[in-house]
Every structure is written in structure tokens, then in C-alpha cells.
Length: 346
Image 1: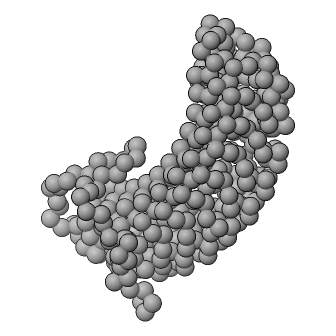
Image 2: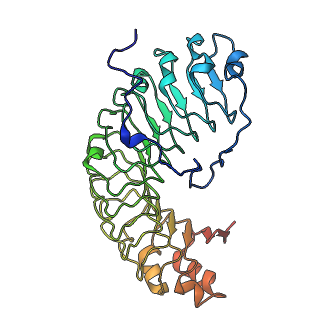
Image 3: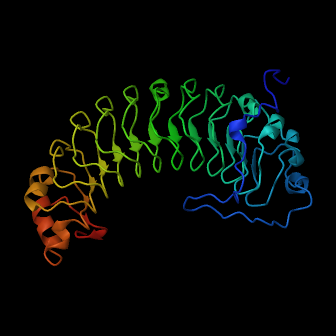
């Protein structure tokens, strides 16, 4: 029975498509839309070949415009639906999908600008991908309490909100949006293991204290100037901070489980705060202003598992182009296997 609280007309003026846009997204890897598509006469024909007891439907890059025309209601056992790289603007048609079986829904690279409340019917969903669309607001997914993986990469989202009920969420991807801050909403997601926030406008690391399960944090290409707010992330293993304005490596005293640290393309002039990271295997520090081999030895030389380092584009490399790799090997011990993508040990 259809939930009377769910409506097809719950449009928000803020979700309306912006005028003067072609629909092309601005993120690497996406397919540029065909602005004059040779449309298929009937979307219904695309799903006709699937038997009624189908559990997985994969309809990629077929210029589909309407979910309703696919007659999805005849698949009562459907567990996964993939509709990547089509021309879908509305997800209201998910009302026809089976509530009791559907676990995976993929709308990557379409033209969706509004999340219909019909999404909230799909309470067994574990994986939902809405990346590469034109969505401005996160909403109408608060009843999807079993979600484990949620992808909103490259949309137009300006706030992290309406997620606090998703207590099972393990992986949240919001890269390539318009986020200016990590809002307190994140404090209500203690199960998160991976958080991807690259290519936004975030100026501070904050509101992460409750994410005790977090293993991977990526906040590349933002507006950070300090490493802070990570004290409670004792299980953090991978930290990606490249392409920011960070001037000093600091405040990692409680992150002893780090294995990967990426500070590429920041404003570092010295190395510090690294010597205690005994589990570190990868340190990526290209395109900073590191000039001292002595600092490299002091901070990294006694790390027993250090396998890979990147210092390309720093004064240590630019002023010592011939002796650079030999000096790094002397600084960093027998565990070192790779320098700037070049293997130095077989």
C-alpha cells in the first residue's frame, strides 16, 4: 500500500534546474550528455527482455528518460537496478519498485535535480548512488535506515543535512559539491568508516568527534589551512589532505593507526609531527617547500613500515635532481620501496 505521506508533487523551488545550463557536469570521468539525442521510441522495450523474476537489471547509457515507461512493477524480486548514464530527470517512478527486495539503486550520471519522497519507500536499500546529477538538497532518504553506501559525488549540494537517521551508513561520498563546512549533522553518524569530501569549499576540520569508526577521510581540494579536529579519530588509517593551504603537519598525536598520509600541494616548509606514526606506509608530500633531508630523516627515518614517499616538486628534489633518490634511500632505511612512483627496491 502506498504511504499517504509520500507524494509525487513534493517539489522544492530550490531543486529546480538552473536556466542556461547544458546539463554537462564538471567532474573528471563523466560522459558529456548528448544535447540532441536520437531518442529511443519506447523505454518499455528496453526492459521487455528481462523475465519477471529478474533480480538484477542493468540499463546503462540508453538515453532512458522515464522510469514509468520501463514498467518496473513487473519485477517483484528485483534486488538491484542500475540506470547509469541516461537522461532521467525524475525518480518518482521508483514507486513501482519492490519494497521488500530492492537493495541497490544506481542513478549515476543522469539529470536529476529533485529527490522525490518516493525514495523513502525503499527501506531495504543498502546502496544508493546519485552521483553526477544536479541535486541541490539532501532529503527524502531519512527512512532508508539500512543504507550502508551513499554517493552524491558531483552535484550542487551546499549542506550536509537530513542524514542523522542513517545509523548504518559506512561510506558517504560528497565530493565535487558546494559544501562550505562540515556541519554538526555528521556527529549523528557514528558508524561511518569512509568519508569523502574532496573538491568542496570546506575551511575547517570540525564536527568529526563522534566518528570513532572512521578509517578513511578524504578532504582534498578544499580550503583547509590547519590539521585539527581529528583527536577522537583513533581508528583513522588513511588521511587525504592534498591541494589545500596547510602550513604545518600537527595534531596527529592520537592518530597512531595512520598508514597513508597525503599532504601533496600544500604550503609546508618543514616536516614535523610524524615520527610517532609507526604504522605509516605511504607519505605523499609532493609540491610543497621541503628543503631539509635532515628533517626527512628525523621524522620518517625510523618508521619501520614506510614503503612509499613522494617529494617531487620540493626543493629537496629540485636542487638535487641527480642525487635526490640516493639521498632519500639513505634517509629512510630498508623498508623503502618506491620514490615518486619509481620503484627503488625489487
